[in-house]
Amino acid sequence: MNDKIKFFALGGLDESGKNMYIVEVNDKIFILDCGLKYPSKNITGVDAICSDMNYIIQNKARVKAIIVSHSHFEECGAIPVLCKFINVPVYCTEFTRIIIEHFNSDFEINTKINYHIISPTYKEVIDGVQFSFTPLTHSVPGSVSVKIHTSQGIIAYIPGLIFDPTAERPFHTGLKELQFGDKDSYLALLCSSSGSTKQGYTVPKHKIKKLIQSQFDTCEGKLMIANYSSNLFNLKEIFDLCEKYNKTVFLYSRSMDDKRLLQIKNYFVAQNICSPNIKIGKLADINRVKDSDIALLFLGSVIDVFDKVSNFLATDGKELHFELTSKDVFINNCIPIASKEVEAVQMLDNLYRTDMKIQNITSKDRTVIALSEEDIKQYLVFLNPKYVIPVDGYFFELMNTAKIVLSSNKKYNYSNILVLENGVPVTFENSVAKADYVNKIETADMFIDGIDIGNVGNNVVEERNEMSSDGIVIMGIVVSKSKKAIVGGPDVQMRGFVFLKDSENILREITNIFVENIRIYLTGYYNKKQDILDKIIEQCNRYIRKETGKKPVIIPEIIEIN
Image (cartoon, rainbow, N blue to C red; front, side, top):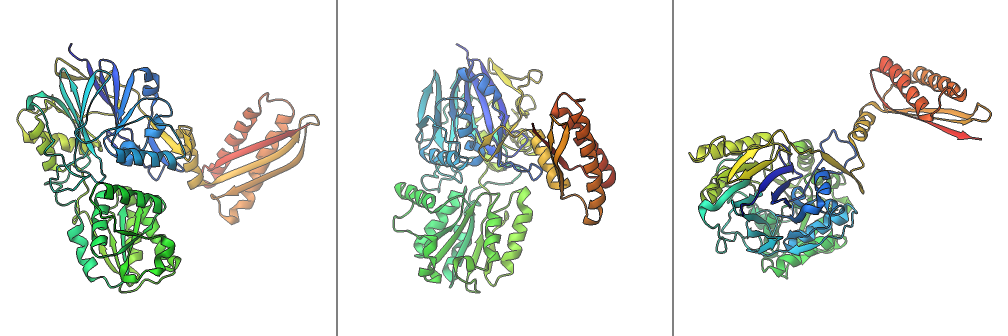
């Protein structure tokens, strides 16, 4: 039987995060990763964004498995959300399971998830389709590439994982176990593109031990280090140095508390990469340890870590009942994403205002673990895929991957390098790919706001943006419909869009608009209360825009009594 194959992305193309790729084999749906992304600054009051899951929900009878490559927010953060709607096995490594459960708890979703734990070089037949997994190196343990074996050839999913033969378990590359199979058997490579603009290889520029060891040698006071909580590869290096120099590790973090850090440590111990003798201290006991034996870690996400350090510095250390001195050293290992460069600069400005010695690690010193130019070429040599589909990146990164592939081998041209948009399906028949731009699958963002999932629409976001930039007007009144009279109020409050000297006239005018319309409403002219509320909003908006140029959020409320 010649398998019918279709591939498309519900998220992850021309964006950073919410990676979610669909491979259909004979109408059986397999989901590769299901992640989140952080909202941009103009999306107010939203905690995270995931892909719209309507296609999956509508076709849930055909969904056979969710395959998770590694434990980053962008790859697995939305698993608890998806599993609220469908009950299918989630295949992942043990460490990835631990992190998914943290996301489950952090967003208070509390979904019961059907995990199937995979190990290195694991093979599994899922509903008649062969899958195999290979451990590769990333910034988190238990990261695997995914191979789907079909009659047309193998589809390989490489989500930013690299070859590092020197990496220790569980970050290791499975070189001995690595079996790519027949080089002519690879139908398509789904190739991560987020690092494609970087020249050379990622290895060994992703390591920091040699960069920071001199600080451990010479520091006479407290040693403080900022590190992303998702970058456990570097965290392991920090642990190793803390153990070597007999330092007690303290954690200044809300996203990863003492219990979670201890869990990470125990996992490292279980994998024989970290000594059980490493000291983990409770933050409340930090003053019981000599300054030169302290290693204070600031761990957080790409969103909050810079504010976390700045908030700590605002108290000059007094929050922890100690002073920052010239003997102290601060190492910043957090390379900011584009939307957080301002916060990073503010943090550095605050750091340099102290007497501490500062080491700021930049992108010139360390490379984020992702597929650089030569890494992509390396996979092309190993796999020799017939087709390459760039995934995981903005459009310019997808195009850069296409250019790398195009220049690396004469067999590639514009017919077998497929740069797609979210929702554009590619079908494979007799090992020939065809993109279908006509029957594009509908894709969209789904917002997560606190514990609400999908209830925050674009209109709500727009309203929050208006409120943050143009302010708000709240109007209230109590009426008696039986008496057809106003019995309380009106009460009108304005915030955030008008100067005090102008407020009296504007307040008087919009109050008049409000009261006049309420009197019309009491005559029975309007059948529905919402009609008069819409009329009030429209008239007040027109007046305020004319007088101030602003468009505040206007919320009128009528309380009716008998």
